Image (cartoon, rainbow, N blue to C red):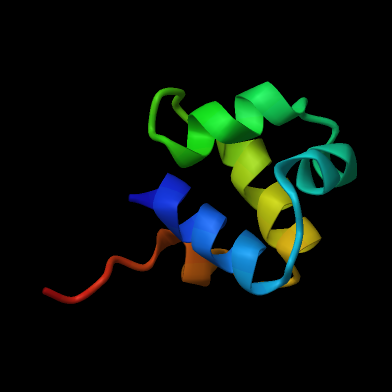
Length: 66
């Protein structure tokens, strides 16, 4: 799930949801809903989040192996 991946990367960078939200102009509540899988994420948001987290988009889209 992309939301869990965003959360994991954000936490590994010691970044709060509020800090991430400010970088991509999305409020903290929406970041939280994205991370929990309660809100669909738009393509342009994936790009912005990848840039803000300083990762390649493929890292956000990559599925975990079972």
